[in-house]
Image (cartoon, rainbow, N blue to C red; front, top):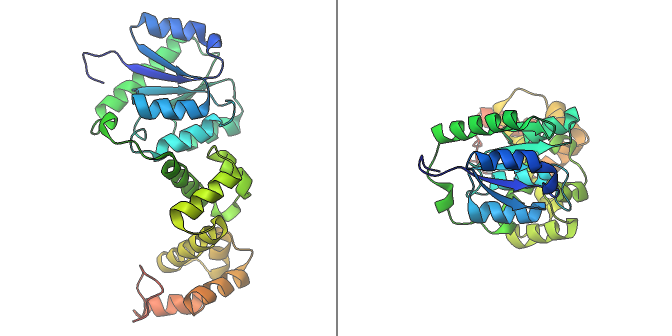
Length: 262
């Protein structure tokens, strides 16, 4: 957005008729509005239009607003666009989830239109001040790559208490079968195998960078106990976590490429 152009707002909401007053206020301010009525359409239009800000509902058909936000965050073309949740979903855990997923604000639909516009203007100005090269000039990333990035980030962040694969898929807006197919096609491995390797990778990092004991590390990366972690680690690297840490401190292994022994 330049100083000569009105801001362009993408609204992703399956009940736009309920937003009559906010729409009227934004149009009265001269803002350009685009609309998507479900999450998948919203992701496509965000990629295509590269709006200045996105107003996003939580309770959408198919892919919910949290999944949309995760996917927007992973695409180079949309990751810098401010996302503001505008919703009736006001439970504390929903508000926290929205902000955790990268939204700049979380506003109830009962908010007076003048306050909503003021919040939007604040986030538009903040985005202007911290503007990077125009995201609209960035080539679109394939949908499968965006989904894969969103899923691997979610898994990496929640290893300690990982939800079932079906829930992971739902939280990035696809079916379990499709997500499994994306892992096989893009990474050449199954989701289970990738998760196991990610647990071991994060375990290696914690062994190298912290003084946590093996039990604490096992818990942090989602193994059932120190014994399970040690067995998996030894099968993968040829020695136990404790031995790995000793070898690392002695300089016999390197912190990156941990399975290389000098």
